[in-house]
Amino acid sequence: MADSLVKAESPLLQQILADIKAAMKAHDTMTLEVLRTLHSDIKNVAINAQKEITDETVLDVLSKSIKQRNESIEMLRKGGREQNAQEEEKTLAVYQKYLPQQLTEEEVKALIAEIKAQVGAQGPKDMGKVMKELSPKAKGRFDGRRLSELVKEALA
Image 1 (tube, rainbow, N blue to C red):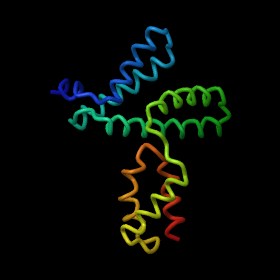
Image 2: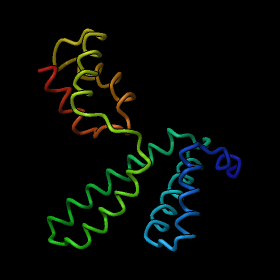
Image 3: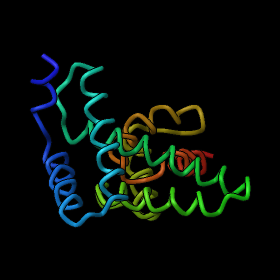
Image 4: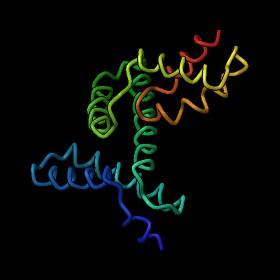
């Protein structure tokens, strides 16, 4: 059962697997290790959720991993461990290759204005309505924390 879930692969996962093979041939151990870990995380999420691997699953895992890496980098820098922070940044760069094109802040503000009008949001109490519509459109394409800040500003 678990194997059938893992075999239904998304185009994004196919790209990751192809890049694993390329990293093996190029003897790029750092990239290989990062991609193998990512692949393992994706498979584990799919098996635990008992769902097939889709691009959405891959993006969810990527987003979570990127968020964790950013937090690690911040904490390492606060702790004065610059070399470790640079290693994390290299890992982060590999992950970011697989994200869809990022939205600019201007594009996000335009989306917020459009959704705000669409749902009839008036003030801060309507933030949930706006975020419910906005989140799927910005998922994996814009930082969630910054997205929330922009919605708060627009509804203030």
